[in-house]
Amino acid sequence: MNDYNINLGVWNSVFAVPSEVVDRYIKLAGAAQLKVLLWILRNTSNAFTVDDIGNALSMHPADVRDSIEFWVTAGLLSKNQNTLMPKKDSYTVVEQAVQTPSTPKPQIEHSEPKHVMPAVPQEKPVTRPLSRPERPDSVFVAQRLVADATLASLMQEAQVILGRPLSHGDSATLLMLHDNDGLPVDVILMILTYAVGEGKGMRYIEKMGINWSSEGIDTLEKADEKIKEITKSKEAWAIASKTFGVKNVGSPSKTQIEYSDRWINKWGYRTDMLRNAYEKCVDTKGEYNLKYIDGIIKKWHSSGIFTIDDLNKAEHNKTSVKGTKQQHDRQSSSYDLEAYENFSIFDKED
Image (cartoon, rainbow, N blue to C red; front, top):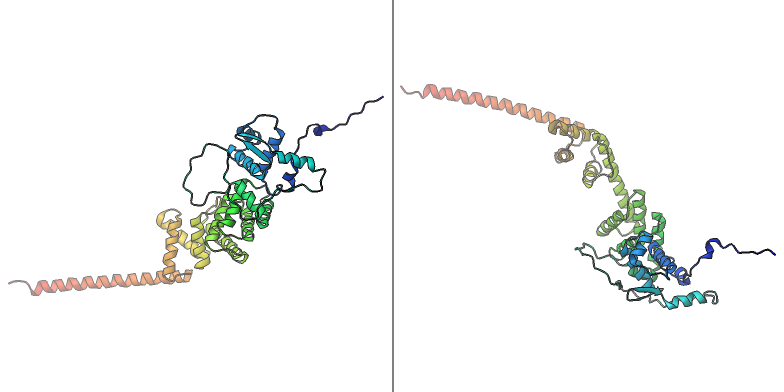
């Protein structure tokens, strides 16, 4: 008689995951929080530290603690001093999942959630003065997403635009742009789309959002106009740098954008005038100097000189005035000499 065995492969070793993780938190938890929870559930029979989790998952210990506190607050883990264990309620959920059509859901208040500070005792890092409020922790972010479906949608759309899961820092940044800076979700998504197209990261997205908030850009129409303005300014520098023969390395600086936007978009100078200013700069200074070029063009603008014809007329008038002045000076010198001679003749003492 032949013996038969079931080949389970990787299924020979399995561990339980509470149904609530998928039913309620699969959209709310970040990649880091899910990794930490799975690692803990897999290693419940072993003693481990925050550093062990961090080393296994290539995460900073602070992010590990933050992720643990998220699940403690969610009720899937319980904490006895520094010892972590699955909460008893979570076992009940696993056992009843097959027997009942739906799993019981914890009661969640739908009022404005309060910012819950992590309770895991740890050394406090040295703090520094912040120009913005401190970023909310992952627990507070999760509570806001549960309370506001629009914010939960923002996080999901952001992951699609960025092409990767959001970290806790990413989620906190987007939440602050919405809650602290008052930007609507659709405007934040437009910033994300533009930034990704420019190859920029979350720091750029945050800075752009803060600037837009201060400028009152709070509708899609205003955001669209702002992006057109930014694009036009960058195009102006591309024109100016090509005219000057300057090789662009990386993104243009704020000064380069400011100068070229003023010259071309606001004052309407063409490339022939820009080249003329560049050549005057090199002839005078012996090198390319953006600030000096800006000074030349500012002087032209204040004098009403906008074209090559204007410039030629101004230089011709300047030459004529200079010639007239020199002739007048020569005549004055002749008159003075004659007066001196007359004075010497008639006023000589006997």
